[in-house]
Length: 372
Image (cartoon, rainbow, N blue to C red; front, top):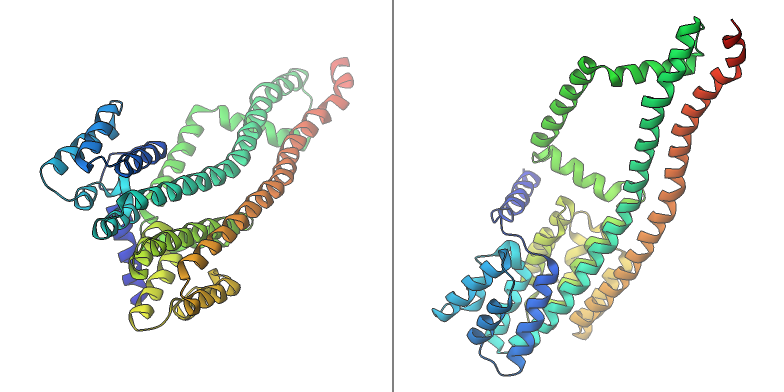
């Protein structure tokens, strides 16, 4: 029952992020944060700084947002409350830190820290996406090569043998039959209908309890990519903790942001249970140890967090931990890339090699076929 409630809460938070259709590029947010930090540091009033930035912004979604924010600030609304109207653009962490800076009066310094965080997080995203692009390109090349052999080469061999009344080797016949199925409009319509139905079933199953648990479990347990995903989530989580704690935001607020940014039910459950334990009086390190799925966090990291709590330098330790996990993520990406390459080559070689053998088997008998 408790797990179901946590899953529903996780699903609601995930869906709430999708309420806004406005999207901006990460570079736009980084540029905005840098500009606003520099202008506030130079003594420019917030409303004037926002007006200038809005005027300089090119037409598009972000300019629409900037114009609205500038107008609301001139109307007397607080900056953090205005940002809350665009949670998909700025995110809970950005809003929480701006809210903390309004209380401390150090908004320019806070924005500079935010800019560094957003830049580092975007670099991490690009690295992970880059690791995923390579196998996708290899897969597309394999499909293209296989398709050209199946649709253009195999049918010609089949027509030659049919004209001479010769029987094709079994392997070649299987592939020719498969090629014929792909070229049959009625059969392909049936296949596409089945695939569409399966896709629709998956679409409706994915948001369910079993769907989210299964998919998120695969994310963290899949060989090669599982470690990379865990390292990516923990890099971001520790970076959030370090950034927010070092700028005066409470641990509980930091964990709330970590929950919303993890994008995985099992991590969400881990941070939710940690939040509950901290509210019960436990320290962060002990709370993580007692939370479900604590095995996702290395024991050595928990020891480092405990040392940071004892020394009163938790933010500094979290920063070191985020750097450690970032390096670990780089290693995971390199390992994934190094392992994917031979695996994809073996798969491509197996598929294309099988088709090549199927093509060569008739060639060995082509002279006797042509002689009749």
